Image (cartoon, rainbow, N blue to C red; front, side, top):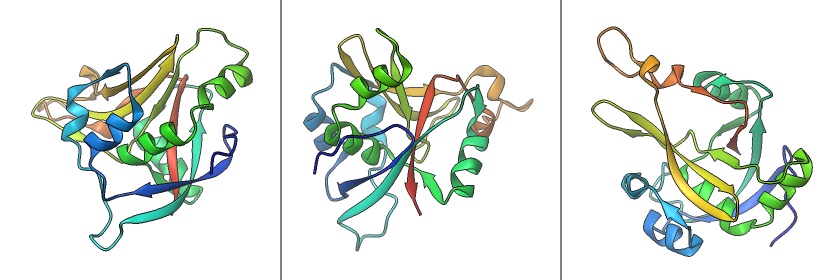
Length: 175
């Protein structure tokens, strides 16, 4: 099943939740991987779910947007934020995604950034979510970290107030 992906359209993925993050990353053959992505739990589903077909959609907003607003807009549309494993399966199932992105945006050399807000890595002073970055012939798996402005006056991170630039996409999964 390798149908063409249209941006902002719903499409299906078959996700094997029995695989580890390391196995799926190795399958993707990325040019660079942030080592912290290996620390993310690969599933938020019950132990009874192994392989499942999910419906997903790329969300894009024409301006900078906060993480909590992205999640709210997804939920209002009947979606939840995708996890890292779901983002990785999107990438390996649809390698033509970057070509389509370039054609839609009429841009050469632009980078496609897709975030998986359903997987958070919470540290002592930073919180991060994984993102796929594709551009300039490279495929990289990185982490979008909270900015210093995302901390409250007690030094506690407030991920919901993380601002994403207008060029970011977000993967959602139909609930």
